[in-house]
Length: 168
Image (cartoon, rainbow, N blue to C red; front, top):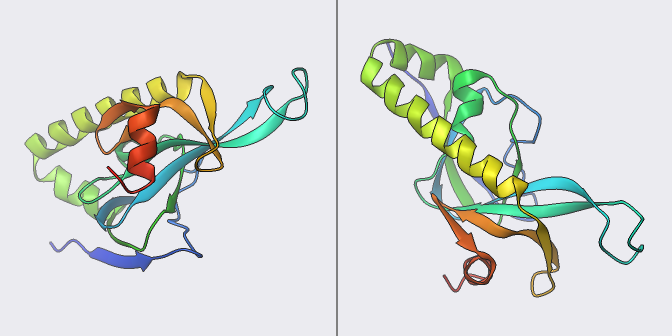
């Protein structure tokens, strides 16, 4: 048995990582180099249109860097992805096809248990952050959650701004 792992570089201004909210991922992505940002589209009543007018906002909910994987629950359990992902910097990604991942896991029950536990923890963390109110980050010209995920940690907005700005 041989598993195939693929690599790809993505860079702004074509920052797509082929991972969109609502899709079921058929690949397990890892960030080798660079930063990937996680966004959600959300309806908001705050903003220039007035308090009773709904508008759609793109909201930053996470930033991932070297060694991080993206929405493991989707690839393992065929659940829809919660967010969309774009390259914030030039990134090198490695990904493993879902079928190859399942073949590897079929031969190693301990790895299956560990990855399922990680997937469950990631999903809970993501659902928590998505449930938080958003705020405008005029420094970055984007909306973001009151706390965001940076790699494996949920952090406050000010620390998140430093990370997103490259200071953290």
